[in-house]
Picture (cartoon, one colour):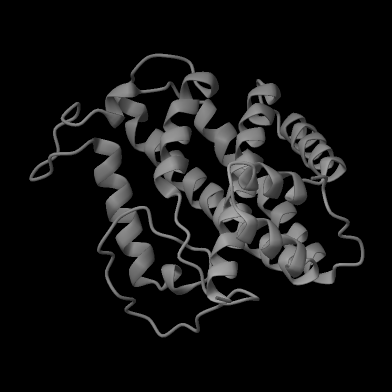
Length: 244
């Protein structure tokens, strides 16, 4: 099944604007991380000993950061999903935000984290330098803090807009099921000219920011777009199940 027509969809344009806004921080943080060595030892449990902690240096740093963000109310906002379990409750009074078609339980942060760590071999030169450990991990945390909402929040926002316009078509494919349903949904969600526009924009911005290898950022963004569409697909199933 071919992609659907989405012209005139105001909510979709709002969602796409959010995705465009996320391009610069993601590119900047990926570029910042590429300026440091890969520093594998940062991600190895016990590679750098941390008092009263059995995981990695990065894991300890990331967990502390996630808990601080939780206390500041970040994870009460739609699309801001923690990477760790058992985050503390907020210590601030902050109004929560919600999606167009209701809250979502979608969380693919394990996949996002796995890809990100794996991509460092393409973004960074090999080697370890102790004076870079903190800076490298800090860049990782900022990069993941931008990539995760781009994929999860962006995916759900786009899916809600598309579903609102073509509810019957999406529900029919989900209800029909079968091995071809997921592939059909991905085709229906894909707007090839829009994807080309995104990839060209990212490549141009990477060049403008002085990235040493803009092609590496471009390739990473292809994966980000793919996962965003996967979240869209998951959201369609989520929305359909709520209508049963």
